[in-house]
Image 1 (spheres, rainbow, N blue to C red):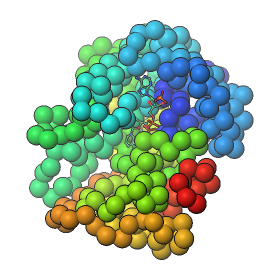
Image 2: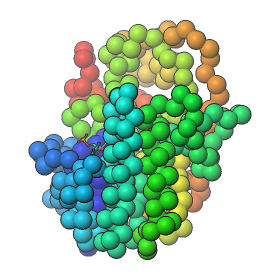
Image 3: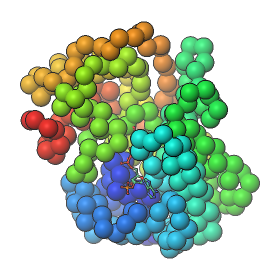
Image 4: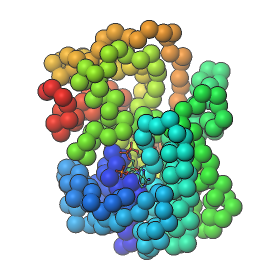
Length: 322
Ligand code: NAP
């Protein structure tokens, strides 16, 4: 059986995806920037109750050609989750690794004769250009030149566009599918509260002074991993994008805080109850019908994901005061 390649093997999503693939019986090869973190990746995967003996870890950075040909060699299936999620005012620190790294992975996949690449894009590449009704499907695209668009959504939009352009022009027989998750939450396997987990951690630690007036979608990290696997397996998925949103409407921070208070009692006692000043957030509708209808995807309810995120941060010892 040829190994399945997962880029971004150290990540919040990457570790859950590796665990899900191993659980399903696939040998996995994962890329990390430095082999120094191999032990951390293996420990994370074992936290997912799976044996890591089917996992191989190799080094490749999004910013260099070195390592990619060897990483993809012999792989028919590539899940490309790696992308920088750092806070920066320099857009190029996000755009360059995100776009050029995606093109490196696609080029290496094509040259190795890989059957399909499933790219983790984002809802930020779909719905960050406001439109009347704020109602989004996979047909929508964020305009990277939207005034005021932050560097991260710009980077994800540019990278996904570059991926589709590459596959159309020079992708050969390698197919592309994009998975576009809303904010990813749900249990972590990593020993740090990475990426979007910082937000729930700040709410539970009491370091978020007031609740931002924002509305957003939530997708469970385990369901996003499952969607990646379904998007790889389904012949009809080739050339398509799939939005990932939990079972339920988009929510506000106020609603999220209420869910935490109602379900978790003392664990949620520092979660703010007051909203920051400002106007009420606009309505936001995000459709996940395509993934459900075409891939049989069954995401968890939003409440389950939010509550299990908090429990996971507590169980991993990642909260300031427990
Ligand atoms: P994460 O934990 O920060 O994972 C990002 C992964 O990318 C890490 O493995 C990281 O490696 C790797 N990476 C970053 N820069 C790299 C570089 N220059 N070279 C090689 N690897 C690099 O975040 P995540 O939430 O799992 O994100 C996974 C994917 O989901 C990303 O594509 C992200 O844009 C997308 N996404 C996330 C969310 C969300 O709310 N979290 C929502 C929608 C889409 P290191 O460990 O070395 O930093």
